[in-house]
Every structure is written in structure tokens, then in C-alpha cells.
Length: 247
Image 1 (tube, rainbow, N blue to C red):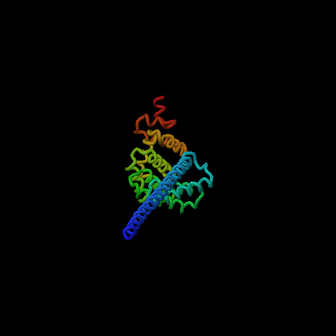
Image 2: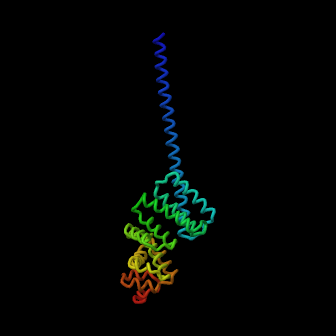
Image 3: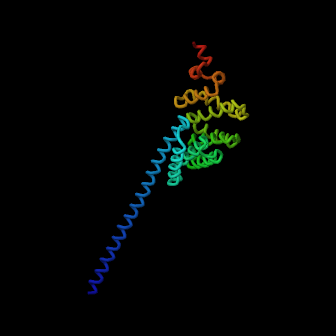
């Protein structure tokens, strides 16, 4: 009888161990499933918001405030899910910048939030030039022309010597500084002229650079700035003297 009791106890212990193992495995599987679903949801939110922000950047503010709020909630959810993901931090910065420009948020506070998330993205991914360019753009929007802005410009330029987004940043900033006779232009003038040439050369940035030249009615000035560049680059500018010489 004692032997039978011991046998029953042994079987019970084995059963309990197996039961605990099954329960533990099932709990682990549920946790993994939950994490996977969160990652999938965050990824879906990221690409959805990225498409909306890209549309805003390329077509102007054609989106409604409801679309903005929806995008903001989606990317905030993605960041909450994966706060150490640099792309999510960067995109949230872009959304806050959009909110400031479109008037959907109080401009200064929204731009400072954008800066916070861009800086977080650079901590997670320090070698990405576009984020440094975005930081310089935020400083421009805040009208903070200081050493910090120059640092962001220098890092964007060093890390992205051929990056179309960096070309466009320099052209935007340089044109605005020139139009307002701002003293900072003297500091970045050499890089600005070089980026105008690079921006015209690169197919990905050429259209935007030409739009900026037209916006500031700067065709003649740009021709002067490009006088030492190859004729193939000068000819990209409408009514450039180089065109007339070859015509």
C-alpha cells in the first residue's frame, strides 16, 4: 500500500510538472504573440503615417486636421510600442513639424517637440544625415540662427555629401537667408552654392531646387553663382546665360 501511495505521488508530481510546463509554454507563446502583434501594429502605423507625411511634403498641406490628428495618434502609438526605434522617433518629429506649419498645433511648442524627437532619433541612429538636416530646418523655423544650427548643418553635410534631402535643405535655407540679407549666409555661402549645383545635378532633388529658384525669382543670381560650374549644370536653370551662349 505504501508502494502504491508513493507511486501515486510520483505520478502526481510528474503530472504537475508537465502541467506547469504546458502552462508556462502557453503563457510564453501568448506573450510572444502579443509582442509580435504590437510590432506588426507599430510597423503598420509607421508606413501609414509615412505615406501621409510624404504626401504633405510633396503636395503641400492638402490634408485635413482630422487626418493630421489620426496620423499623430498612430505614430505616437508606434513610438509608445517601440521607443528605441529611430525611424519612429524621426517620423513623430516630422508629424509635429507638420502640425506647427499647418497651424494645427501651437507653432513653437510643436517645433520644440519635433526637435526633441529628432534629437532622440540621432541618439539612436547618429549617422543618418536627413535627421540632422531636419534639426537644422527646425532651428530655421524657430529663427534660431546660432552655433547649434551650424552644428546640425555641418553634420548633415558631412554625413550626406550626396544626399538629395541635404541639397534641398541648403537651397531652402540659403535662398531664405539671401532674400532677408541675413548675416549667416556669409558663414554657409560656399556650401550653399555647392549644394545648389549638386541639387540641380541630382534627379531626385532637381525639381525641388528649380521650384525654389523660381519661387525666389533667382534665376539670374543662380547663374552667377554657378558660373564656375560645368555648362551641363548651368543649363538646368531656365534663361541662364549659359543657354544663350550655346544657343
